[in-house]
Length: 134
Image (tube, rainbow, N blue to C red; front, side, top):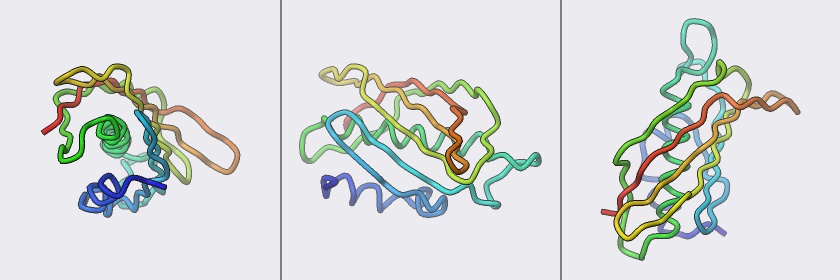
């Protein structure tokens, strides 16, 4: 079961609603988000726009960080770097975020975004960044 405070926070993100993203799993320091590759968010070559991969990876990493923060806190991104490895072609994008190190004030995170078509999975982006509790 997903922590209700994280599910509620996720539900308030209109960007996740627009992307039809689903919060699949949240554990201690880990989060998985899935989203279909929608025609309205593709670039001119038919791949998902890089902004979609960034958004999903950033959110997965952020909720991984929030899972380790005390009740009553929310999370915001301080900075995030992305390496785009391959065009995001497929039917679905899966983002897996995890905490690398949770500090007193800042939490270092990373995420992997994978394009999925049937049984074929291809990593399309790697992200690393810093989150802060607010």
